[in-house]
Length: 72
Image 1 (cartoon, rainbow, N blue to C red):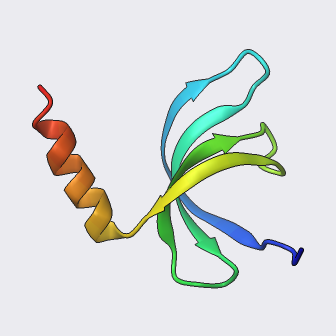
Image 2 (image 1 turned 90 degrees about the vertical axis):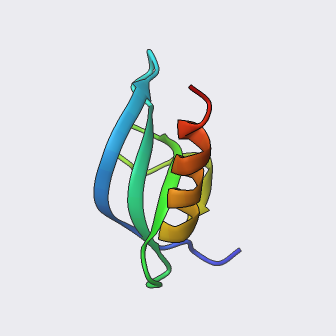
């Protein structure tokens, strides 16, 4: 398997933290040198390990925001 390269460009929000220090975060991440996308996943305290997550374009993020605002 090829190495996965990533760069966390911006931390938008930390949503929660586990007792072991892992955090669920919404970040702007560049994967393998591509344009950054919004990314929601769990990260280890030093960001060397990560859990499975979801990446969203800016358009998808705004659609999700609209859907979530209707849940009130």
